[in-house]
Length: 175
Image 1 (tube, rainbow, N blue to C red):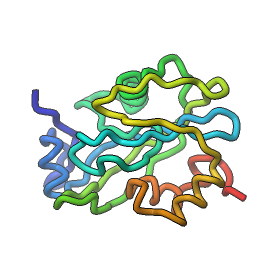
Image 2: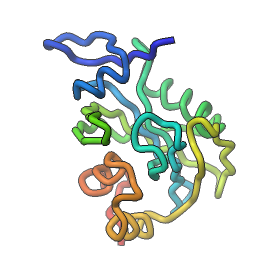
Image 3: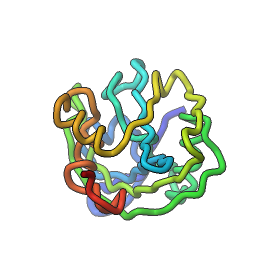
């Protein structure tokens, strides 16, 4: 099955094969979810088989909606598929756009609907090993400090979110 993403080509929104959208750096729709439990933030380490940014740490879920799939439905679907997390209430935190080189000649140019989900304290994810090799909980100040020390361990989009959109996502800037 060929996966397509809704991408803008020549001013029109059309379905484009996902890898082709990244090869051409086409502007396309995406969804990101941050799972929170009090002051803790859930991170996932991308599986080594991922076609870009394998082994890097990212927020709980980053994905692309199917054609005509509402962003919130996509967020719920991928939380379940990637992390085995279901039933959490989602809060839409806004839309951001970014463009980033993700290596291997691929460009992410995404228009992202961002959601947060409040989880019970330290919910235990059940990750799909084809998607996620590891998860961990951290606080926002610890995450921000670690990204500053070792940015190469984190996906470009997570670094962008923390540099430019932290207040929109979390409602505050880490101490």
